[in-house]
Length: 190
Image (cartoon, rainbow, N blue to C red; front, side, top):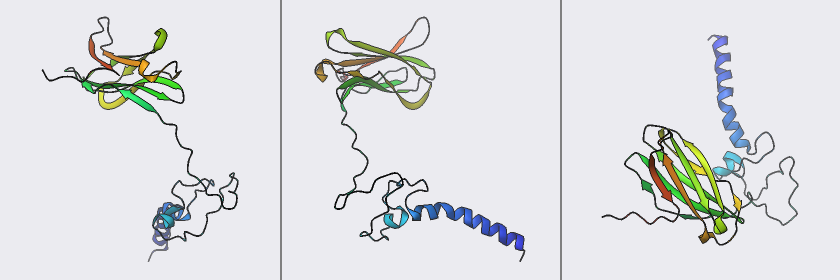
């Protein structure tokens, strides 16, 4: 057999086996945990559960008897959303008011199948006339997207906030195609 072909084949096998070797090894080369608790052997139940993994580089060892915890828990985000609405012009949207860690903001989820780019104006209104607005460009296409106002310190109860998104043609006329609100009533049949 040709030694050159054998050498090329061996090189290809080594390159193809590197991802598998990394998965079996567990923590990645930078000393950071792979998030799966020990790589392929542990995932398949082939590792010794009594054995503890080494402390990754840059992290202090846990005190004896202390358990390692996963990633820090994300703060809870409460939302109040209006119904999912659609227009005959090919725009679908749902608008919400979100509250987390003493901050409030508005968000509108949308899909634009109208075949043209649109403008969205999202307004979050709060107590004492507090208003935050943002204009978002909505590209033409079927991909879902979102428009979100900046997060502001809350001033009052979450129920005292509302958000409205207006989707319009970006021209001098500004034809309104859809208005979606966080406290809109559900559409009725009739």
